[in-house]
Image (cartoon, rainbow, N blue to C red; front, side, top):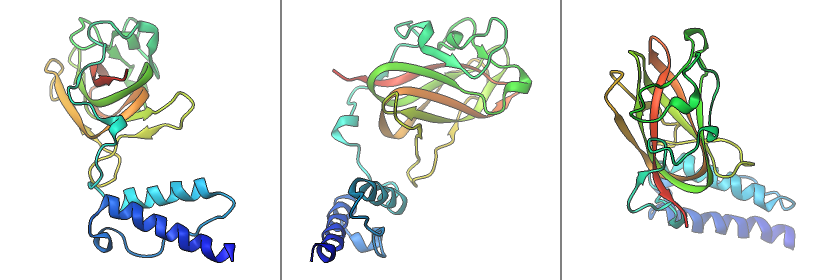
Length: 217
């Protein structure tokens, strides 16, 4: 009897979740839910949420934990984030990761042959609502496009910021090396680590940045 009831209960759970995401459930999601595993209900729930995100793009609202009514700088430009909390995949001599502070006189830069798959990561230490990023180039180089990855906790798997269609967001960055460009996320994220991943650049990767959001009390 229990074996019969479990799929029914799980399907009902999916229906409730979907109604919360989309008032007209049949438009947002059609077809059966993922096959339930009675021994791993948590894994099943993760699959359900993945299906919701995939099939209901752009319809989610930020959770209360990810709300940030008045986003502000999180401490790159003013030095609140210390140097040893900023790391990079590689760097040129004197262009360390910790130079990547918005409006700094120097910047983080890689050698040209190290630009592919390069990244810079900021450790926020505590769980923080992150709503966007401001980028700048430096010395004639700049990042044209980039992705943003993050970890909710240091032990968590790395995730990417998504667009309204549920795809990994590719942000449009800078068109010159001096002008700051602000990109806000379609949905705020809660993170302890934030990584910028350049995907297109002018000459080579050079970056200065500020993260935007709210520190959680």
